[in-house]
Length: 137
Image (cartoon, helix red, strand yellow):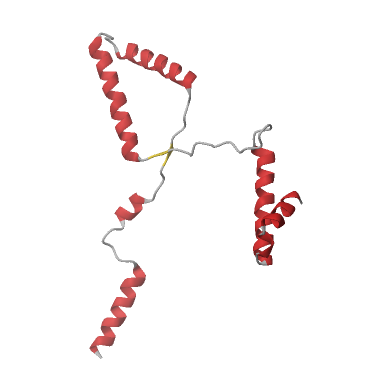
């Protein structure tokens, strides 16, 4: 109601009735979100970092980098692979203390698209034969 009075004072009452109703609904929804998810003192919504999706290319690049680091560790003097695995496990545990981020990988049906490339579907074959018969007549 306070907002309504403020709006009337500013001259917002001349808007079409439907627009006004929609605007009030949006404001009420935003207020509810602020009450639930917002900061208790300021009522401001917290900004969240978006989910990071890692492409297959990026994943391969990260894996290559990790393998290169493993190889360098072997060359430096950690002779056996067991030592390298232990060192990488320790490094991973240190990293996990800082922050652990889960990567969501893109899931597409590219394999199926590649399999069917160049092949025509049954329905297209049937219509193609029918049109050829019509051309002969």
